[in-house]
Image (cartoon, rainbow, N blue to C red; front, side, top):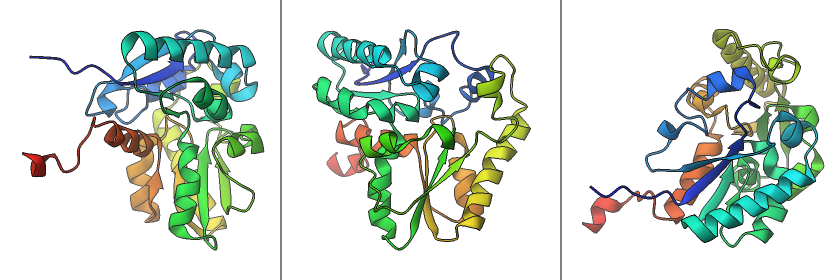
Length: 247
């Protein structure tokens, strides 16, 4: 039987640089770096030096240059037809990556925010649930086409005690029940404080395993890394929603 070759590459953090809590989340189906999350093969590629500091806290120009070189190599030598990343904060590199590589680049689920804003209308808000509100800048937003005129409410997890270990105690594992509750609580609190929120976009690629529960509990549409991945996969014929009609 012929094995289908991956055409989408996911640039991920370097081994040994991933906080213990995020490594626990990687075991969950739906996580961006878990191959079981996709009904088609993907190529996971470690980027040397990619970590919390160089991507989220202090975006690195050197890292961007390395990501461009690696992406070009994947396209030229392995037939990769689209590039994505395993952290939504790579949004800050979106414009440079997309202009440097000859295939589609979708660095962050934040790229969906303008689309979702159009879906819900300007008078209602798009909630963005992020790993760190304080690190999500206007530059990240602009790189994804999010303008000041859009009605966006950002909800951050960095003040949740268990989640914040990824920044303060990265070698300490999560209490998974506690961190799960924190994620849901921040989403609930955000919608309670901002009832104008009509849809939610999950910035963090570790949050898609919680998307279904957030949808049920808040009765809102939730977009995440996997909804973005699905969109590109359909465009590249990795998934065909109407395949039975073609037989």
